[in-house]
Length: 106
Image 1 (cartoon, rainbow, N blue to C red):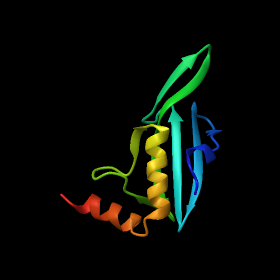
Image 2: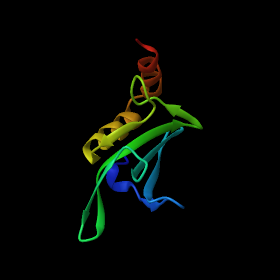
Image 3: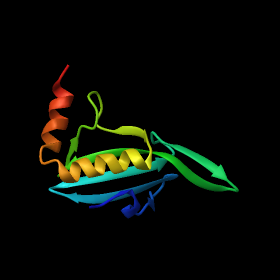
């Protein structure tokens, strides 16, 4: 089972931001980003940027998996929140369907 600790962040070219991608199996890929232009918080300690929260998105192939009713991404997520989503995506066989159903419910 993959967790937040398995993520390897890399600097995004031409941006002051970092991204990690993680294959969760079953065709699902998690993207976790922080830095400029993302829904995240970063503090600076002694000139070093330290992420406090992250923006996440999930893909099934090339399509977004909705992570909330009115948006495909979730902003300001802590590592604990990300672990919960990763666990759910890896263990719930109806994860994608339940997320699509949530987006289409009003």
